[in-house]
Image 1 (cartoon, rainbow, N blue to C red):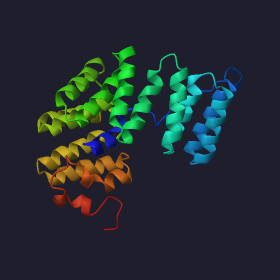
Image 2: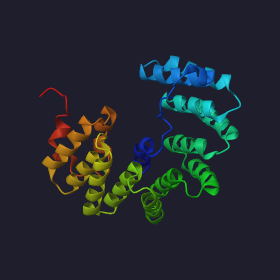
Image 3: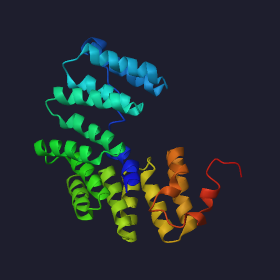
Length: 264
């Protein structure tokens, strides 16, 4: 199930995404924060090299705080420079008063590389300090799911939903687990909830497409999958949709033979 874990990882944790800094007044913000904000802007403009340079400068300018190193790690992760990202996360981890902040994206990086034992150990380190951390519990549940421990995975996902009933990643993971267990009605209910929670994201529609394919409702499956495409499902994800083990009867799906946007 490693491909499933890798497909989920970017949605589960937030290492590769960041929130833009709100700079109400330059005089109130450190130079390192201004450089990080510049890095955000450059990344959005498509300048990866320029963005990385700004994040590196920020980390060098304020090398006693965890936040600049963490932001650099996130930027390197997004640029798929994984070895450098791991070094930056290790630096942030050593500086942070709450190491979980760096351990969560570090575990994501390790999981995406297939280093599940390392990811699990990193998450365990976080959970020993903060057992109530929902994201760490959720991440650990994904690893347990990958190992085939459905009971532990289900407990982790249910805990996350008990604490935060509208947690998008927990809903998606729980829906996928229900699919894995053949509980199609439960899975569809969960994915419908996810659509309501994140109406502008593709994950609920994608999940409903999987459910419909399992029911051999091929027209409905394509309708949901095309909706997911319209909501931002990446071209890579669409092109690799057939490899999703929870998609049934892929050859019966007309939309996979004629992808959205392709010439008729």
